[in-house]
Length: 376
Ligand code: SF4
Image (cartoon, rainbow, N blue to C red):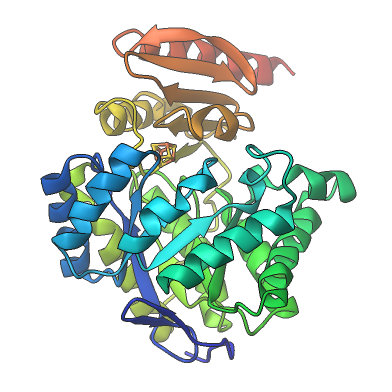
């Protein structure tokens, strides 16, 4: 594959960009505090071919578990910071890369400016000899950029990303990669193409968020990755799939297969894909609120199969971190709490239902939606 001339970024023992082979990444879905299960899953993913494995860490207890996990594995590890970026120094000694979302920096320490916060993260990375990932998401663009580019969320996303690259480079730090993700493969293609045109030197990590259950989740990832990889864009990839823990390594196998297919000129053709029912589901991670999440996503898919001809999006999310926001654009959304599932229609909450009663209620809402659209 012809590749964009990106610069090389060292992440632990792995080189990303600079002509190195495309690295397949994955993420643990185990509870981070369950050290044995997480170490086992790190090795399960690495044995399947993952070059970098991500772990969710949100609090000091999980950071302490990460220390123990690091002691038990030599696999290249990364952590993603959610809204609490202040946890960075607690995780940095035990990982090779930290991902932060520019759209989440404004939540805390409101008296500090974004450049001050980025400078602080860069110093943490320098102190611990690790890389950073600027990980933007179409669903959580920094408010300041949305205000600056009203009605053009894509431009806001691109400009926000370029701004963060510039902030780091002004500090003399270039050990970073970028990702621009969305649950819509077409937006992933558009965002990455535009960014790569502006900054062909910056290594890109490709991903489709909440791609959902296989095989649809693999098809969505292919729809985004194939055109990008074929035009030389992408230095690392992750196929996010909603899978039970014992099958989590299938994400890695799917990623490797896509790379091999693109290399050999085999591309999928799915002309009707995306014209009917679209189920988006998060891949789950340590933050998932109830073990029943994956089963719930599978049941939603089975229950709603009768509506496959309808252009309706249903989102199923595992926790309160991304659940409330990422279900806002879906026609119907479900996000998991510890004992109940929150059901929404667009951004309006319908109610919270037990895991046993939410599916009949979902069907009721789906039937109502179909009837409304049929009448319209
Ligand atoms: S929605 Fe929550 S559980 Fe699902 S992947 Fe995102 S953070 Fe993890």
